Length: 295
Image (cartoon, rainbow, N blue to C red; front, side):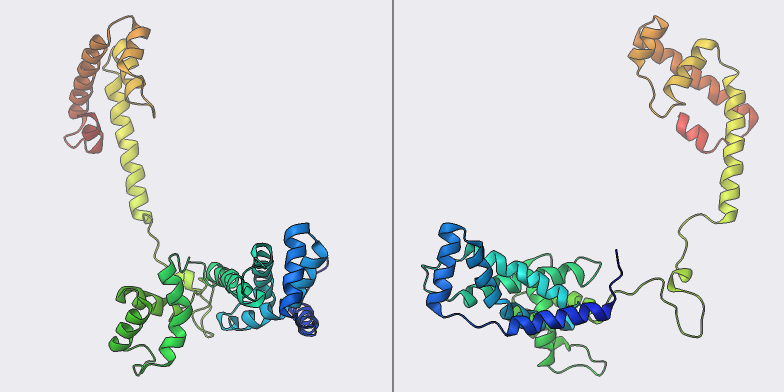
């Protein structure tokens, strides 16, 4: 598949916009007639004509969302989906122009696209947050700001009251809009070779802790192996199947295999654990985690 660069995409988008803007507008009776042909007869030619005439509306609404950093072509594409949904649901018998009805669908489709793609972190999950996301910049421009360019406390309260949202929602959205996503692969500065991710703390154990953990594990295994030799065959069988496996067998299952009751298996298990504890204590006075698991 041939590669298409950004300049080709921009050129194609510009051509599409120019073509759409040359389409003649429809009179009320024309759009109603086309809508009825689509609604009653599933006339795709009528649908195409109706949608084509109002693609300029999609472009106009899409242009209002260009400051979110998303390509105009993508915004127009999403808006066109909203236009198609409007054409499919439009009732020509209602006393409303198709352009008025379609504007809501177009705007809603574009807003959903912006919310999904503006940030890798999901934004505007509720109706209140969505309203805040799309109105905060406009309202903030009308209010006095701090020397750093942020909202004053009075300004935050004003926006919260105007949009009917909580003060904490305003503070969080302001922080999101003023601090966009940044890649961990970005260099810290032009003078430094390291990326941001190079300075993230490693939450895993360090070399010293890894070596200590490995040594402790080897010692515990030695203690346990020597202690198991103190058990008879039946006791060792019970410990192996009950305690030394990821999914231990039940008392009933072992009782069936050994031909005894599950109560007898419990007695044998307790006796075996006692022997193990005594055997390990003979080897060390600090059994540690191994003894804790067995008690």
